[in-house]
Length: 177
Image 1 (cartoon, rainbow, N blue to C red):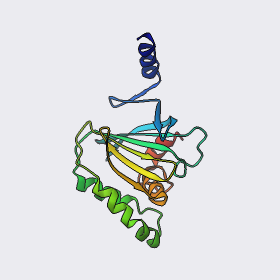
Image 2: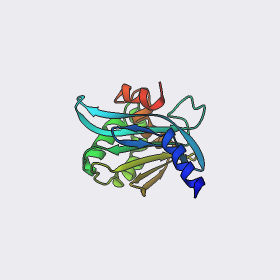
Image 3: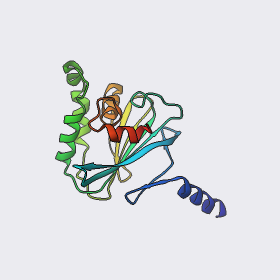
Image 4: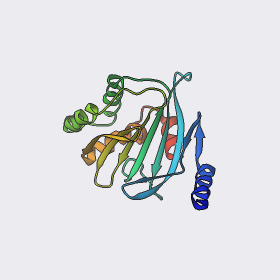
């Protein structure tokens, strides 16, 4: 019992807190313990809180899009419909992709989008990128969709971590730079 209490204290001391959301210092993905690289609160027009985002990468990862495994997690601060999430994904995943790449990713994107639920404030959405190129979507700890397509998994993560992201400040916070 003392070991568990000590472990909880260590975890709380090394976790970050952003807008009331506790962000753990580590995450285990695909059997590998990953370190928190960064986290931040995304706001729309500097006022409306959208979500607290966090990114865990392998130690020494230089290219966050290519690194695997990795985790992106989002704790929503307001509600969105599944259609809202689909629209946001569809409009941002295409950044930097050629028309041929977009066509090639369309089936994987359709499978991914079919997994989106509506979210409410406090919901926790997680995207895990596994070493085999599988992207896994979970909400509140329940796996909703799994797509094995390395190009899709990279394009999905590039929405937040790529050089042509929709928000360069959030990218910098997530990758720690």
